Length: 76
Image 1 (spheres, rainbow, N blue to C red):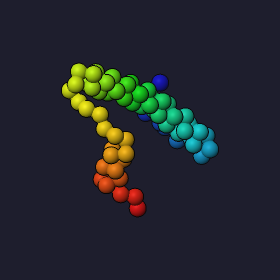
Image 2 (image 1 turned 60 degrees about the vertical axis):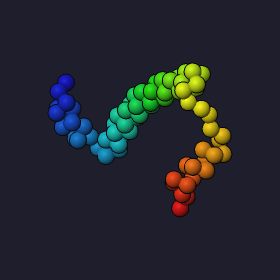
Image 3 (image 1 turned 90 degrees about the vertical axis):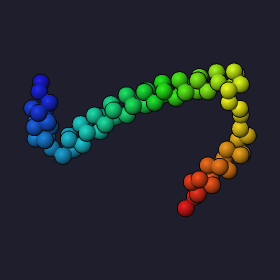
């Protein structure tokens, strides 16, 4: 079915049905985005681990990292 026809038909639905449809569509995007994010995060972790093992990068003490983040993004 054509996307324009689907849109027109969806707009004819009662408000609650449109809300349910919107939630379903939004949720389907979240799942796809979440999976893509997980894949990219795993790739980044693996890349950094390999760089650390080669000696290309060092490690950071967690509290030092946290201090830098809190300085950059102060709490309101």
